[in-house]
Length: 299
Ligand SMILES: [Zn+2]
Image (tube, rainbow, N blue to C red; front, side, top):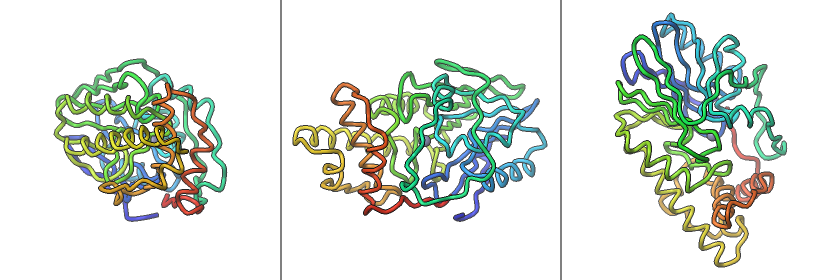
């Protein structure tokens, strides 16, 4: 495990749980204390991480966690949910569908890591466009951006009275945005929606907390990706050929640069009218881009 995770108070009774270094399987969570129980935004990838989070929560608020909002169906955000067995699980409808049919990843893609005795829980409450959770002290708005973005079932959580925005993986801070299971075009629209809220605090799905300035670098990467996909298509390159020939430039310092190979497969498919993507091939491309070495997991 890398450096210790911290609960950072971002507004009265609202915390970001930030897990360095924000790489593969190392995500952030949110915690909102309430009059009749706390709300957790997302869970963790492994049992030790989830137990550490719950211990930090118990030290911070006496309120039991009664609600778990899942920002999307990726395993790093969902695996630890079984350690909150009594919490209501709130997510977009597509999260329920994705969790019902998890796709198995070829075992060589990632470095092995111990998940422990935990599993995702399927939502108990689903919504289509948005759902508002009312608490004696504040309004918690959970919104779907209107279509696929980072995944098909993204949700961001907006606290209008506090100016705090929990983006899930609609924002990576210091890491490469990952669009394989979503839509670059839809993601750009989601970023515009979130920017229109003019948030004071932005809690990303991975990496350090910031303000509204965290949104534009993600959009910048996605526009760069779409341009690269267009060029690859014109030149008849495969996603892996295009990725290998691409100068990442200002994005070269982000964590997980290998995501460009999977991102290009999705972006090229989208330009071709959203043809289905061979997800297994995309993961293999990322592995090959990474020098045919397993992707490093610091979970
Ligand atoms: Zn994700």
